[in-house]
Amino acid sequence: MANELATEGASGVDAPRIGPRLKAARQAQRLTLDDLAASCGITKGYLSKIKRDHASASVATLVRICAALNIPVGSLFESSAAGEVVRADNYPPISFGGERMAEFLLTPFGERRIQSLLSRIEPGGGSGSETYELPVDVAFVYVVSGRICISFNGPGAGEDVSLATGDAFTFSPQLPHSFRALGDDTATVLWILAPALPDDVRPTSR
View 1 (cartoon, one colour):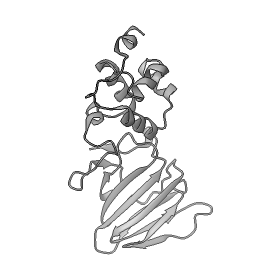
View 2 (cartoon, helix red, strand yellow):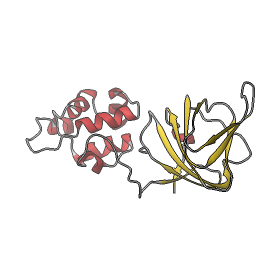
View 3 (spheres, rainbow, N blue to C red):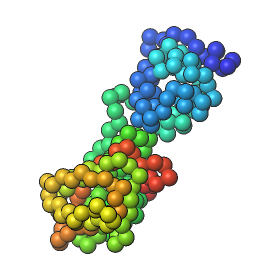
């Protein structure tokens, strides 16, 4: 509490406004103020003042907040508060299993509301012959180029779905399914999951 009192006070005129970015990061992880304050060991009132830029956090406090939000401290001071940019020539590669394919994460690692992946699947490649399920509500697939087939197993699964360039498909990823590239060309596929995968089943960076 002493550290909180020592760092409270109105922000200086030239001080960067980090409140909106902290709020966006907290909402992205679907955390309440109470959740975040408890994980950082500070009071909700003090955190609320930081969020409204009515108090300046100490370095130690800011580090704890950013660690709880799984964001780099430097991201709070970047030039744009609108969101996080992933450049076309710098997609973060991830490992999500599968055969003869490469995948990239297009949304921030800390984003919990939605998750977007880009897959480049070589001919004959895909998730493998074994079906899998994902603990999220909905999956959206858009085929940027090439062709893929999504196969389903289990009650109510329906028939396999073949998708070509420009096709889009929305389905429940809780149904057992698998996918593979069709034809002789590499398929480029955009996957959007909502909400994002929980931490224990999330892809890892590589």
